[in-house]
Image (tube, rainbow, N blue to C red; front, side, top):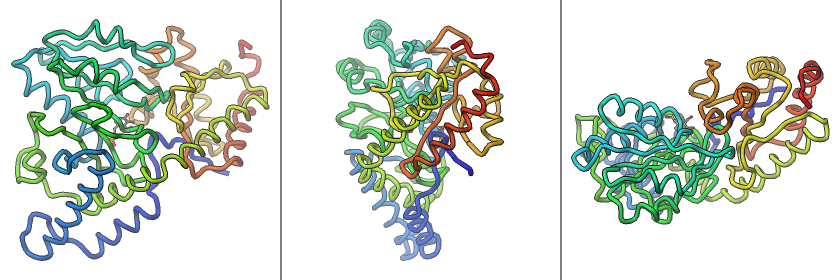
Length: 382
Ligand SMILES: Cc1ncc(COP(=O)(O)O)c(C=O)c1O
């Protein structure tokens, strides 16, 4: 048996999504910038996808900018805001648990003379609003806090942060990548100026994403050339993938409640399956403030590299740390921010599930974990 349980690294493309993309690949090859009929057909697909996506986010279509994924969206939002607003101040705020496509941009900006506050988190991966308030300064120009964490699933109070920023000059960006399809993404209710998404986390294709840019928000855009995306991001639009992302977001929005219910059942089933087998574990995070598809567990009997290798050999595909750092055995910066003990960072695994999975697959994962536990029992502290 083979079980993929790494859906926060990426999801497969849903059949409806690939069908919608194939239709475009086969029939609509025009360049949306061409003014003839072939071009206009492609433009129509891009425009209607933008309208649909804007609708799902409660945004205006003009506020949706297509990108190659969240890495680009995060880079554009953070560098764009910092450079455009440096005359207003040079202080930036983010958290210690952001994805590297956010963290590395802030580290780069520090080298360019900006000052960055990296907010700490508690053992559940949550920032404190009090600490945030204390870090806010008159010269803060940008705050970037992720909505849902990709390693432990911790959810931050984005709307409460937005309220604290209401009368402040700072722009508010959120990386909502992992939240898409799991929590409502209403940009007005969230109160954000900038929001990043990437389609391959909600059963869409890889290499396409978006940045929501609230009307009136000025950024310094890097990609110069043609006048696509209202001159904010030059380059011929990826028409089939834009169609794919819109189709995937429609499904994710429509089916959100049903998928979440299924995911919560699967998570509960998994935790019970481990308990029934008397496998010792502790959750890294707070189950009540957690994305439904992610469970990060500490196993007090085996190092993560050994576990990942044994699981891989048994056909169970899971991760430690974020997918983008997979292959490296650096301890996760997220777990390091949450816990002081070394063992938590070295002996934890992220399981991320899909609504398409079944109990048999979950039992198979638990059985493989039991085998590893039995081999390493003498190391267990329990
Ligand atoms: C929270 C988060 N932000 C950003 C990204 C980057 O997305 P992409 O690799 O599609 O650019 C990821 C992907 O792992 C992610 O999980």
